[in-house]
Image (cartoon, rainbow, N blue to C red; front, side):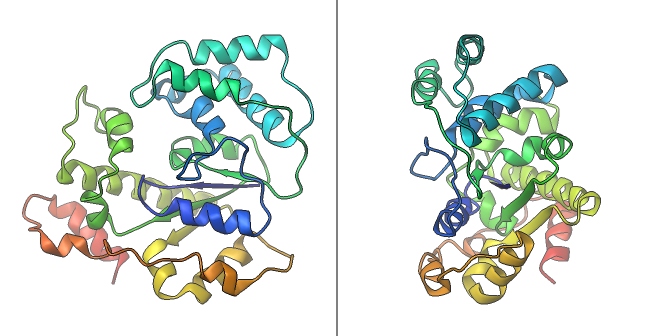
Length: 265
């Protein structure tokens, strides 16, 4: 089982497309970014950080049941889902959440399956303690490039929690600060779970697809045939690589700038 996540705008959509090309089932309710929206419904809200183990396990049970079994949800499970969708969230209206419930259908077991939802990194440690065979692919791009990304949804949703503030201004400075906090946390988790977390540099994938794809396939222990040229054809180098060089660095934390230097030297 694989999960794909990262700060929004890091290139996770491409990695999901690669996994689908490899034969992985990534959910039946996907958006244009290839997000597994069932995961969004069940885990993408700030209260998930303080929810009880019982509630978290209930969410996870529903998620796995829909994604990888033929067992239909019970009436009680549907009622529970409607409670999750009862109130609008920072990034999603009630109607959008209810639509996710309407799209649920009876599934089937899959030999290869997983999901892609950038926010997966928020709860990945909690998931590791519950799913023994789960592997996590953390996709990232240069933090300063991400500071100028149009996609700042994670900063809007989690910034207040991570910065311990009630409100957060959506600025390149705060975006970079958020990226550094998340990246440091994932690096620490990788030390605790070295065989379960792969740090995948999207920019390097564009530069050196053969090497990065080989590392990815070895990480998931993929043993089936695949068309490497078809997979490489999915990779498109974005023009936004290196965009931070157009801007001054004077408004960024020196500590964070030094941290990024350690990653690219």
